Length: 346
Image 1 (cartoon, rainbow, N blue to C red):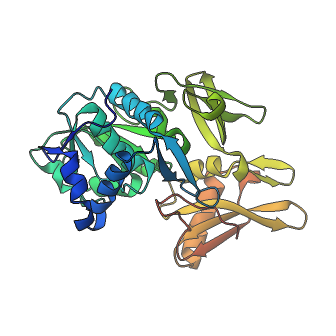
Image 2: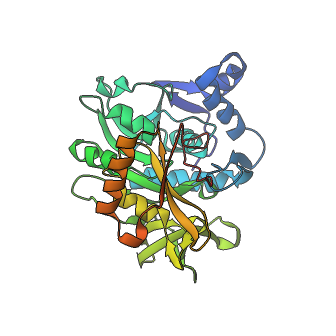
Image 3: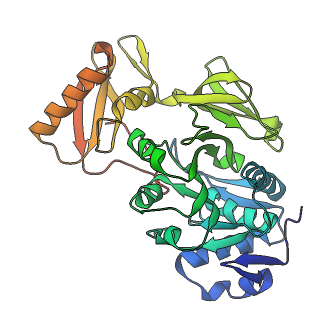
């Protein structure tokens, strides 16, 4: 495996990496982002610096060894059977680990990296160009759903949980779509879940060389080569079928204790998401007798009709003890720079 090949194919053109690096300073905007990472990949350090998403706290900068990142790229190349010359669509910002990995996959796999603006409308998928693989976040996928066709074999969706209405729409798409279980610390995904087609599944399946278990709190523990101490303990509550197969139930640090009962807001949201069309989340606020009370936070302007409809949905979809005691509207739900929800208290 060559970590630093002399050439990379970009938009169908084999190009000297040296030439791209020489022209980096004269490039601006989204094109500069991926070239800046290319510069970092080819510097004399044996690591890259990446910033965590900040969805569960302040973003922090961490270091990942380049061979560790390359191993992650190889796992993806193997899983999706990517071959030399296959065209892959790169539409993610290279400020984040997912965008960086697209470049590394192209370098190591000798793939044709077709680079476009992350804010594109993705009409390129309706062209005569055939793409073997692409990775996107939810808001990009939603744009693609407006297209008549996708000239794309595999789509990897990451960044945040996939809303039920979006997953339902993917059932009519010919492209085989996968949800990723990933984090910055593991250099993107360690497991994938097929969302449509004959292999559709509710569970994530680990990629080669990765094993999972849970601790006493039922939180997922990841075991993979290259991690410090050989494992990473997460705060994600998980249901395991075996050491390779799991589904995520929510985060331990999001759990709400109300009236002596424990609630996972993510599980409550799953029951509601097919009926509530506005962005929303479940949180809590202090309550004199319950300790905490459940609160439904909705993006938009408050009006009596919507409150009535939301109350009706909650009564139909949730058990009596799961009912939010309050519905709050806010102008915009708090999110991190890469679009993940931040569950701030109300």
